[in-house]
Length: 222
Image (cartoon, rainbow, N blue to C red; front, side, top):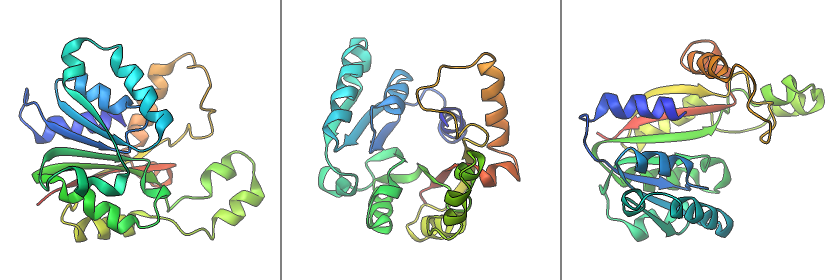
């Protein structure tokens, strides 16, 4: 996903431009720190105290120049309008948040309002078009059968929603096409570069990206 995001940023903004980035629901701050290291000014919003603590600890270990380019705001994902003015950011990330909120339409509309004209919205969500894949690949046949009837956010709904909030879909990728069943604490395997190359290729190639565990959608503010 980091490769995909970098590809979109490089393709949309002049080389060397220091962007204003908002990471809504930044978690431990991995993406926010990566972008701060690249020279951008990053604001991360997070509500969970443990995540904030981890992000601050990670930030504290960075050189002074990087620390100066990143700030952390304690708050909920849906409260961006409380903390920031509309149009304040060139890039807005909202990764792994949508599936945990009760009013996703309102959240997305609020996030989109933070974008300046021509700004990039990076949205990472569970793939509602393939909810049975993870259970099925793990051999959980009951879970897979139950997942066929689950309601969640598919590409069609997301495309329509992004158009409705003024940040129409520009492109989309699949994330975790072949590796979603790997345990989070698994050690990196031998041949990691080849694995990442395969995932990168599959995430941008039909029909593979359509059955990925996650969808990475990139919308552009009109």
